[in-house]
Length: 211
Image: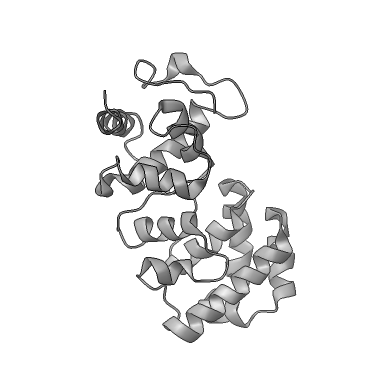
């Protein structure tokens, strides 16, 4: 089975297993996803979803958050960890959105990537979830699982994993595929305990590589 054939089979099986999988960060406006994904670094999505309720209650718009004191933002987001750097990035990012893009997220990948605090993972998430564009989000679940399954070969660098997956994942499938990897990585192919291979819908085709 080629990597392309393996990828197709994995995609189809995960669709059946997790038909409604989507982003686990709560947001009702695009800019809020940008804030949440920055806060999610080294923090659970569940905690981020709680913390941002307070943040948006106090600063409900891009303009309000752009004008907020960085120290005030830091005080609110501290429970997500790395409060100082996250607050600084969020403030700078909102200022850019306000001053350069009329408070809206640009639709161009490179423009999103150029925003303060935004890396390739975050930019891909925005492109896929907000704009419905082809996207591959190489978070820790994606990197771990695609290596274990044999879709990539011993690659841990997020960008290199992304580039390898672009070659074998149909563009229209990338965003949903990565969301389903998050669900599968939390429920079955876990990182902190032994993977539950006996429960896995991919057990018979998985390479089970130890990464």
